[in-house]
Image 1 (cartoon, rainbow, N blue to C red):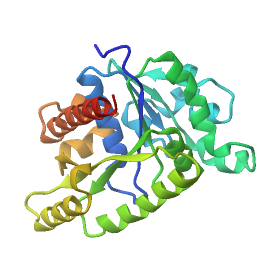
Image 2 (image 1 turned 120 degrees about the vertical axis):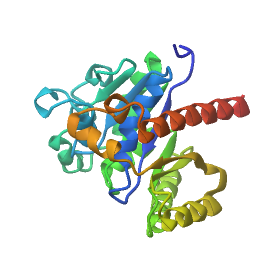
Image 3 (image 1 turned 90 degrees about the vertical axis):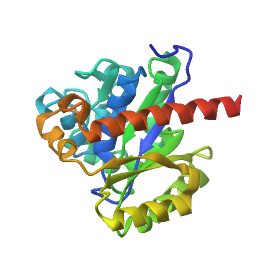
Image 4 (image 1 turned 180 degrees about the vertical axis):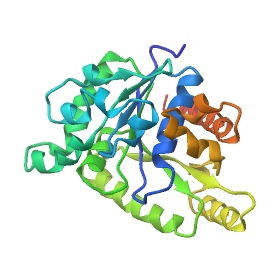
Length: 269
């Protein structure tokens, strides 16, 4: 069991470029963290609701969603639902969330709606990790997620334009840090869809490690058909096929995340 006194760590899983394995990483990292003994909340902040679908929560069961939390209708502690995996809870999303930006309009603290709501979670101390699956764009939902987070966790596909997309994300992080959340940092970069048979994957991995050094995780997530299949069954890949290469990679990544966080706390003590 996780230490009940462990402070909650909030990570925005973000990349403004689509198709990089962001939601897949949110689902499976959350599952893997729960599997190694952490208490995890996954917040689906994408109106497409793919993280909710991938965790087996059909749309008709999403009676209370992140939309209700951000509009102030529901306390965040009452919006979390249990998933099929012990230790992993979810705040679901649906298409209503796409209207948040328009509905909040010029309301005060509109960029802090999620951060303000999450104060209840920090007080309750239920979770050791909160993962926020961000939309693949810079909008009010992404800004809210980064404003509410301690750090940004970046999935990066091993493909030609990877560094270009990462540069754009860094600019966004700098903007949020400069105006809304001064303590925001990059928690780490994980390479996804890695294909050892493809020389481009290896070249991208070298380039990213050269630019970002220790921020890049040693663990890489391989291109794996079981990882791609799992969401259509409403299951994380660790539940769908624990022994496949993708599942083992996410378990390794979870252990690396926990190890890094332990070192960070020791250094800050």
